[in-house]
Length: 612
Image (cartoon, rainbow, N blue to C red; front, side):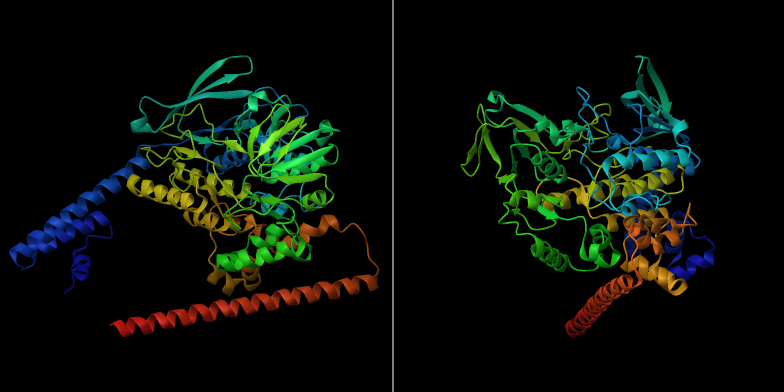
């Protein structure tokens, strides 16, 4: 009789520790050679010991931790959804916000605030993500909102979200967190002591069961230093101080950077300045907001079907689409690294401004002079009045110890980019400490949902050793891909991974049987955040309709002109033709991938049979 059958007939149940213990008893009763039995017993004892340690560690995580009161630091995009998710899980959130308004970087301020180094909104900003790809999973943008939202209007959405889910009453405004440290009994309780300062200078020290850090990446301006910079007589500022190109009227401006904000600042300034120069170290891949047939690009790119297409094919297709409209080499924008491994700039008009001569591309800065700059290609520009550094932001969480949140990206360790893996208790979560292609808000929401499920005891983390190993492996992969320490990933695989941990990831095969139309939209259509509210905890009854009507909701706001019947028929034929072409492409690519995988598996089986 097999050991497994003996085990179940012994009535030890399914507990892993009982399983190991039962095997010990069984082996002792078997008539085997003494030496073999001794070796087997030694192996099982070591296995039981390791299992005891791992299970005891997970047991300590849950049994000694009674999370109820949660401190949410920040009321921006990640802080709002963190507080709302705490309420969803029956927790008691206290959200501490240093300003007098929600929204974080989306809170527009007419004038810059001295010594304020976090990200700020400027006049010409428009979202890079379309509205239904950037909203939370159970609260869509109104149908009347344009496909891409002007920066100032985004805050209206977050205000409506906070009001709808009654989050505001849990927020303390004008309260700055000055210190987060472990409580004296942290090893047993997992609790934290948070020190904050009110607008009147009052210092308050409170104990919380858990902490959700929601200050994000846009916390401290990155201002590079170049030789001779102190001799420069013009004005130097960071893009977080920029509001409008009108302030640079008739001036010569140099913008440094290859990101979205660098393109926005350069383009907006070019309408008012005498001349604008754009200095980039590595160049940038420039993408428009709209893709083929006027469909928002992120709705075409962020699909689950795209996820199964090899990266080389996606790179080739995207390159072809870029080259149909732009010649990055002639425009001086061509990057040194291949697509998806270099800077991406979403901008609709920068090529036109370069062709008009109002923007001129330059290489990286070598050094400053008293009135201008010298570049790495040997060229120089004089009579520069303003230099704007659109060079991003640095990690900055001074009120948390470095052994919890590292001081630099190199030192930052987060299990699945959320939990510090070396803490004894999972009562500290960092929400929004990443960069991705497309909107960050839906990914932040999944991080918050997972963290709150862990706090509430509905989800468990693996052993400390496994979390550390996974974290190191991910950091190593990022370093190999980008050549520097950063957290940057495509949104769908990571979101699906978190959704699986939470229990809200739909199963495609089951969906295809129960609801074929939804399955097609789910797999081939845009990866709307609503898909993570179809099933599982806290599902939303409107998720299915939101997915099926997603395209109509996206374009509704732009259909402000009524057509005559004949015009509509012509348009309908054109759209239908385009849709048929797209469907043929999808079918062709799907068949190609199917047969490719099929023949690869067959060849593998033949080779395996031959070797055996």
